[in-house]
Image (cartoon, rainbow over all chains, first blue to last red):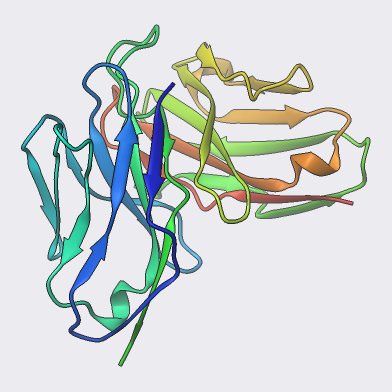
Amino acid sequence: GNSVTQMEGPVTLSEEAFLTINCTYTATGYPSLFWYVQYPGEGLQLLLKATKADDKGSNKGFEATYRKETTSFHLEKGSVQVSDSAVYFCALSDQGGAGGTSYGKLTFGQGTILTVHP
Amino acid sequence: DTGVSQDPRHKITKRGQNVTFRCDPISEHNRLYWYRQTLGQGPEFLTYFQNEAQLEKSRLLSDRFSAERPKGSFSTLEIQRTEQGDSAMYLCASSFRGGKLFFGSGTQLSVL
């Protein structure tokens, strides 16, 4: 079956440091890949996505590139801010099912807690 | 657009009791999903609806769990004869035609 593995956290950085959160996946077919973020007290929000190999998703200074050859989708940001402190989840979609293509049936990694200090 | 709302935010119950959660999706979103998240883990897919039809159920959804979406609007998730292992955050999400997923803040269930 599908699975997603994220680097273990928590990750603690100083403001303006470079961030990398590793994510690797196992899937049949050609999944779409996502990063979701959960800020304290809020629901999960889509941060970025990539739907095919070599695509780069980007949003709010975060980037991730779909690497089929290494089955990876690492999240990066060049300069983190205190406001980036949150839990980050890597996920992939199951493209099958009776409803056809869907970005809603997701397999998530275990999440990585990021804390950024001033 | 008021977002996906879930009720209640917190539920404490005794083992063996039945509980029901409600999810109100974003209006006009035809797909609705339920996930379960335990501490330190990512959300796990439970089931999803397209309009009023329940199209897929995970093997995680034992026969003690039942979900409905009458009239294709709000949805309820009922757990019968709760067990301590059911303690988790239950998340609801909705989308329009399988596009971007919007999550609610969840219902935290504690089974004593």
